[in-house]
Image (tube, rainbow, N blue to C red; front, side):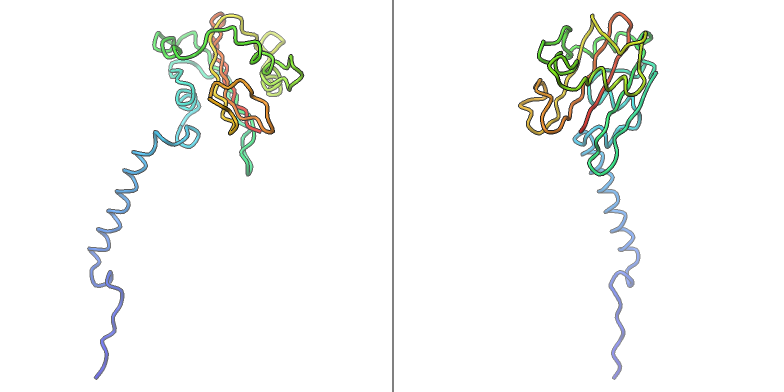
Length: 190
């Protein structure tokens, strides 16, 4: 008496195997669609404009991106992301999208940390100038406008925490200059 050789059951039922694979793929596609809003913008944004819109809420789709540089990379993802948008052609939707931003001037503490007045690194000035952004021979000075801050450091008490400098620095800062109609976006990770 010879034993019948048996293979895996999916060989006997190829249609069932194909249906199972299709079901797994379909579930995966729907899971990504459902989870996408929960994932960080860096992982899901397709363009720099979409990235700024997701991180700050500013509707810059009608603005012109005049500068973009991202030095993030390596194992830890340290680096700077800098963008400058010309918003002179942006419509009312852009202005209304900034309603959650804060009016300048910023607090003395935050200004000192970003400008280096308290002896810290010159982040706002240094980061922009390191990347060759000099408007009129100097780094951007904004007198009238709005700003956005998201302190992403693990020790931050809230996203508005103005204690930016710790062992490492992880924050997103953007400022909109009403006079020049420019939006400056900066993300720093050390």
